[in-house]
Length: 392
Image 1: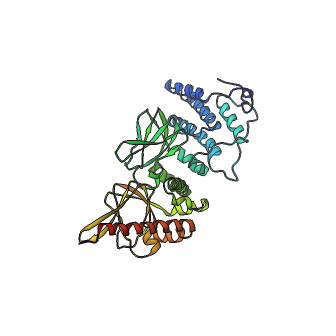
Image 2: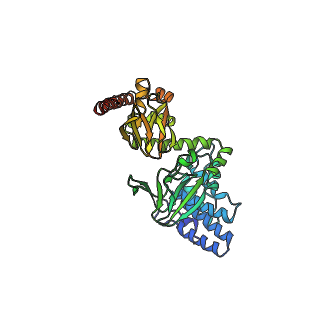
Image 3: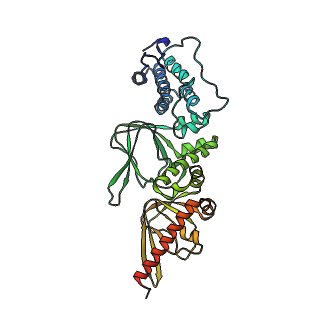
């Protein structure tokens, strides 16, 4: 295992690279034997090798294991931060040692130095935007969580207080259909991040996530992130930016109208939408009252009804995920022409009236599409009233 440094010229050379997993397995075996210093050395080397070959989450997870047995050891986190945290003009590049350093840590150090000198590394969602010291703080506060195949990591509808990153393994995102049966939406592999809405919103989980195989995760709780933000306020802005970017993705997937907004303007518009958790039966838009904003159904459904007086209510439509409402009152002025209630526990996004006027009306294509939609809904409502007849 103690390979000479001149045998490690594995970038562009036929010599096979040292095996990070082998160092990890040996380090874990040494931990079981109580040989902590030797184990830490091997685990550190494994972490640096993982980082050098573009698997930073595995490296971070090993850092957590190292800190569990040696709380004073922060060297590896500092090395990872030098590679993966947001770059500063004053950041110094790691230099190759003048003489061959002692093994086994030398293997990882040489690998890191050579990557730093030229080979690009993949960014880590959220983590790579952090300042260097905040990166170290966040990675120290993250918790490693191992789950077995079939284990539910988050449950749809539950209140969440943490986000996750997949270190190794595979998880599946599932959402309940109308009949209650789960529907698979996506599979997430190493490097994927999920559950981040819990760190910035009190909205419930919008889907379940289940491990398809034995999986290792990094879990970062809301309390841990808030503690970091107190020391590094910029982290809060970075988290909000990350959340907005994911929100843009959700809006693009679910709302055709949002695709009409030029790409350069989407971040500004998305920042205006705020998530809102609503219970079944909650009134979002009330007939006869001006709408307080433009709504998008992110999860769940809403029922549109028309009050005809004398206790008579006409069902007009059911709005599913991705549907927008509240536009008629905003575009044409005056009160809402119908009432919109949550047909089930739902999550909606609301763009307040003032933001709508400033952001949406400045987008000609979106304004035109919303005007056409509003006119169609007006005509459909009038047709429904004619067909059902006047109230008695």
